[in-house]
Length: 361
View 1 (cartoon, rainbow, N blue to C red):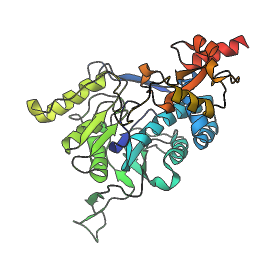
View 2 (view 1 turned 135 degrees about the vertical axis):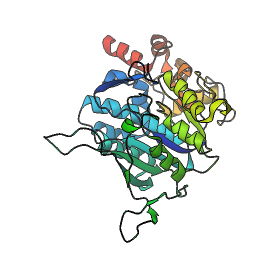
View 3 (view 1 turned 180 degrees about the vertical axis):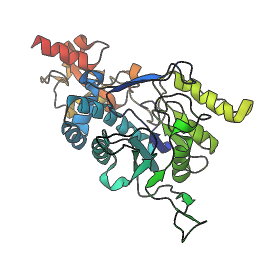
View 4 (view 1 turned 60 degrees about the horizontal axis):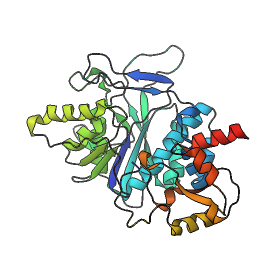
């Protein structure tokens, strides 16, 4: 996402990990075989650079994260928060975002979304009620997920879906959809099911894409998994982009679109490199004297690691997020380090540097 231009996306749907404390893998022999991910979180799963960005630039968001009950919850929320900040940057002012979650972390994610997008940008908590599966003798059967629906400005696309009326008085008529959606899970859809462990039904994504985008709009899924969002967007004439940590996701999007469109499907661009932003305009060389003077003022003459004061000639410009990880030469991704800290850090991250300084203290 760091390599994508700002304000280019009309609709974001994400179905991220839920902090379920479980590991997932597609069954051997299924269409999605080879896709796997863990959903267990510790502080070792987050980069110190993420903490710096959130704590220094988004104090309200930082307070929400620190209110979490456990280190596992904090780790998960840090992971989500840094990505949601990028999604807000990518979303047009007329854009919408749907965050798919369940009761495991939905209460925390609602606060994170309020901090990132603004509480007044919240429109709905949509309940996806699916009603299939086992039951429990200890508590009410858990048969729903949530979709947190936010916008990014005063104007947004919304084509309210119509569904068949259920009352006798309006039998045979269509009424506007409410915030409770009765849509079956993928479990009983053999033709659609790929074997991906967290696959969502096309009917769910169809409703979201039809409601919150128009033909030609750009749809983005940063956790695209088995590509349901990409397939639905493609079928409805939307441009789309999906990202996933699993290489299998790229195969699945090609397979699923070609299944419906045969050999006529459009060429799909699969890239593994980090895109380069083109919306920042001319950027001075990262270690230019202009950048150095601006950073010197922002940091009050202190090294951004050891926090000691130095003369400007003893401070060096360094990337916060390495260019190899999508960082740019833009001033917002730069810092000043003293010569010693910069040598210790080398081409490694700030987490390594701080740990070395801690051990040396």
